[in-house]
Length: 291
Image (cartoon, rainbow, N blue to C red; front, side, top):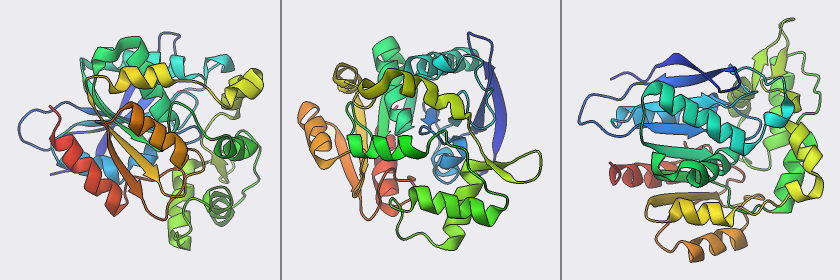
């Protein structure tokens, strides 16, 4: 039983080379694979704890780096940094990997991409886990994230990178230790050419958001959410203190999709890392019900 991943690359329709961590399923009956999609400024390393566990439960996991993040190419045209394009990139992965249907795990922006996929090609989604995001989002959380995304940071050492990670995400993980923040920094930073840590995403990911102005802050994706939850199993995970998925929005989602599973992760904000005991206790029984 191995939890190591291998590197996989695929090509987008507009010629970018994109990257995924590919975790092989443990031996056993064939089950549909899982496609794991991270949030706005993050990358596939966010799933480095949960992905091997899912693989050990018998499902192949492809944790992707969305274009402009991690080991995926940066886009020459920053206006392609949008969920509809990200969804098309995922469809290109499925086609090139020979995957007809999959279970999707989407954190924050990854959840929005999953909703976009439901609108574009619903049949590829066998089930979905949506982590701390909804078809509308609380303005406070988006403004907090927008305030630091794409801004230059000066982090000559890994200790300063960890301090930055704590400064921007401490509200979500008040229980984290210095060791946790160091691990967090090594997910969101990479070593730059001078040896100093640099953020592992293209700052231009903010260009379309700035171009859209105020209306970008509150997108209406309710029709996509309805399409996603119609006739398939969905699990919604919310951080108890999330400032992006408010209690009111979560309640509205549950009213619209009464069959949707739901769990709240205590003491955590936006977004749970999915390595929390409560998250795992919901994820594995949910996956066990899917083909």
